[in-house]
Length: 400
Ligand code: ATP
Ligand code: MG
Image (cartoon, rainbow, N blue to C red):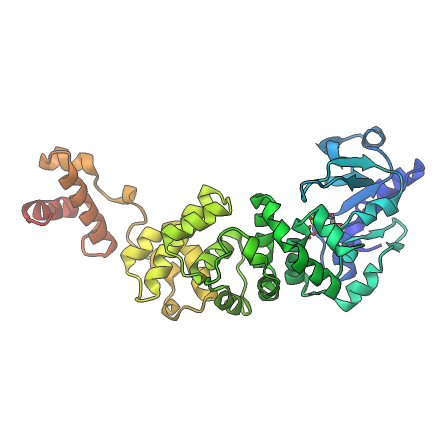
């Protein structure tokens, strides 16, 4: 049994000793057979959730309504899901009914691709009902059963096909591809959150370029938020992804917005369509402001200062995009700035009002901004005396 499964082996053995069937299933089996390190090890069993809970000391109901119980008896938590079938799918995305069953084959049948429908027994035997091992060898994604029916049941599977293509560097079987072309309009029924999850994984995958090219050629983008216009430059984007891939979701989406030529403000609208968090959106916008400046010019210290923590994202995206202006190291320049936020200025509005008897108001704000800019540009030392002297000069000058 491969190393990754050894820790969880006692769980399978406990279930088997009670007369139940239990297997490792899903991505962990696929990845291990490919010689890749699996992340989460999923277990499927004929035991019903209540039966699982009786057999183990420490369990958590992580998804008991769809049959999943987390078992914590052996250190790491393992998700154990009862064999189940799904039926209904009147909305193209969620089964109307989930039914627990006692046999493995019913459970494997509902899975999306043959390579994801393999099961591994505690003794190391692989159960391969749909010739998934051959597809694994030939690097093919093939829907389990009739592809059109499977995409009718859950249209997200079409996005999963291109996502797995990008992650595994696999091709898509011809019939499965033809079914995607036939059923792609159903993607419009899928919740943005689920689409986002798949897209975010695709964009960070080792072969993101392949996944995105497939997505474009199958015209899935026509049914994805903000990517349906004919004139968007997804092609240019795929070219950049061939060399290097973004390492975080924020980088991935900032890169997408940048390659599509969006302003920070349009990127905000685009990312909101995809229901990204405000945190990701603000970070992407700050990174885009400096990146868009860098299309024309070397950004000033003030530009870098304003980007702040978003500079790490901007630098990474600029490098993936092979920006000509990326020659100098923005992060290093940023580190060397005399201050990194307004609060680090040696004076504030209060000081100006007290020491120089300046009235509150817009002029005070303008003077503070000029002082901040002068300190960042290293034109004035960040000391109280130097800044007060500069403030007096600015106060006397007509533009301030
Ligand atoms: P990874 O976790 O590496 O992204 P995975 O194959 O484990 O890949 P998950 O989304 O974690 O993918 O799903 C686990 C398993 O559940 C899959 O391998 C597949 O068998 C099944 N599965 C997940 N989503 C679907 C779906 N939408 N339709 C059919 N089967 C699915
Ligand atoms: Mg998984």
